[in-house]
Length: 108
Image 1 (cartoon, helix red, strand yellow):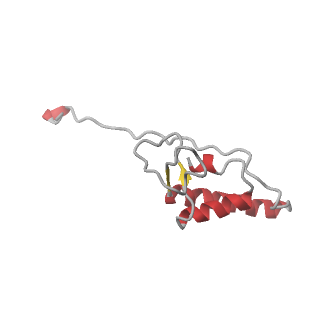
Image 2 (cartoon, helix red, strand yellow):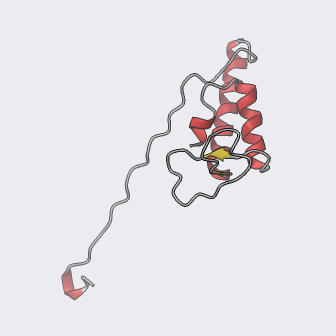
Image 3 (cartoon, rainbow, N blue to C red):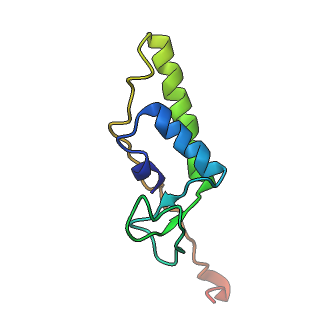
């Protein structure tokens, strides 16, 4: 949800938006994973369902990625003002392995 909210934004605007999310000035609209998410007035201007939250952990992580990308642009000598996020993708992590103790009667 956080990555989808900053897609197609310029780098400067995306960084400002995520910093506002960390200070609860703007909300991330929840579109797909919105079961049980409350509605807030900050999200109604960005998506019709009005559901939104302030995901601190993902906002901090993506903000650090954007800062790293900005420093890479500085090293390569490109213009930071023309930079925008054309593609951003977040994949699921690997599933944890579960164990069932079947020996010695420890199944339940």
